[in-house]
Each structure stands twice: as structure tokens, then as C-alpha cells.
Image (cartoon, rainbow, N blue to C red):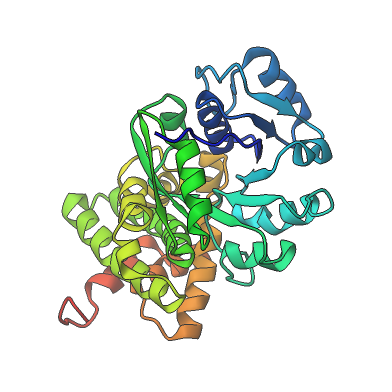
Length: 337
């Protein structure tokens, strides 16, 4: 069996998912440096090897290196793994641009569209750092805490460079973590972005007390909307039937570890948008994603009724019950249409 290649990796972003991926790689005997913008938090993590804010009780790999200086963190590694909110993706790329070399390779585990432009993140990365270097995206049905605890997990690594995707997958893979590869970067990115919007919808439905039947129907019809947009943006239907599409959609719509689902639950139970956001106290990616996906659907003339109604709830002061009523009273038609 070929040995897993060892390449220095710097993880940019010390939140829950960034820390979980960093400790996964380090536990796989990969040299890893973790950078975060909160110097005090990094110092505490270096001393205790616990991310008490995001992964309480999880002991991080002893080999994990912590670095608060961005220039140093970028310079020590060939591979950079960005794990930041989608709204900060371009800003983070601009911040590291001065420190990357021609040999630097880029990976990201961020999900969403670029705010105000609706661009997919690989398009943003190519815009800032050029299209010549190897790039890959890590995505799929994953909760950070479960990965950090070593619970069984599977996801997808996608890259136009198939060899690069295979290398990253091999470095992530272990007895409890299975990484598949794909060349469909647009498809996996659309799946990772739109599922957050549908998780808000599922939360609203459950918060209103509409039950399991409604949730199952919403997930299934939501998947249709994911595929419509994914194909229109260059993705493949079969990708969106896999881990990065259906898998991630099921996870975020059905488990309360999902902050997007919890946000929807709060709305369905009568909280205002500001109250619901405050109750989560973390970034709810589905809010910005709803604005961008709705805009893309309109510009591409794609029918996405569930996304449209989530957008109405979030940005047009539409009461959740009214949005659900609209979906239920739409004109009857064949399922395959």
C-alpha cells in the first residue's frame, strides 16, 4: 500500500470545523499548523489542546501547531486549507495573497455563495489567486464535533485536478473517516450552499409543528431545487444525489446540531429574525445563501419555490405560516416537472 503523502498544511480558521479538520489531519500523522484571528484563543488552545469555545471536552492532537502570525502560518506550508464563513472568503484570500508562493496549493471547507455577487467560491479563489494552482473543496455531511470525536464520517473532496483530490482524500482518510473524490467542483459547491437554506425551511416546518411527513416532502422537493440550480451552474445531477448534495441536505435538515435548522426552528416557534439569530450566536450561512440563490434563480429563470418562500420570510417580512400555505396551495402538477 502506498504511504499517505506528508505535506505541511496550514488551516486558516480556528472555529469548530477548522479545528476539527486540523486535529483530524494531525492525528493522521500529517504536519499541521492552525491559524486563527483570536490570538488569546490560540494561546489557550496551545496550552490546553482544547478548543473550549467550539469543541468543548475534545482533546486535540498533541502534534498540532498553533500560529497567530498569518505570514508565518502561510509560509510554513505548501497547502492552505481555508475554513472561514463564505462572507469572509474573499477577504481572507486577499489577506493571504501577499504571502503565498507559486507552489502554494489551496483547499477550502467553506460553504456558500459570495455575498452580493452569487459567485461560487472556486470562482472567487481563481479571481484572487489565479486559476493555475491546484485547488480543491472539502464538503459533505459533517458536524465538526462528531469529526473531532472520531465518529464515523464520509465526505467528498472535489477538484478539477483529480490527482490533487486523491492526495487530499488520502491524507484525510482513516479508520473512521472516509473521503471520496470528485471532479465536479460546481456541483459540490451548490450542494453545500443550498442545503443551508433548506435546513432553515425544515426548521421552520418543524417549529410550526407540521410533522415528519412535511419534513420528508420538503427535503425531497428541496433536492429537486438543488439539482436545478446545480445543473444550471455547471454541476452534475449524480453529484447532487451523493454526499455533497443529498447527504449534506439530510444531515442539516434533520439534526439539531445544524445551526441553520435551529434558526428555522426558532422562526417557526415565533421568534423574530433578530431574536432567532441571537439565539444561535454563530454565523447562519443560510441567510446570505437565500439571498444569493434567490437572485440566481431569478436571473437563470429557474423555478425554486421553497427557496423563494424562505427568501420571503427572511427579507420580505412574510409570516412563516403564510409561506408554507403558499407552497401547499401551488398549482397541482406531475412530480417530475
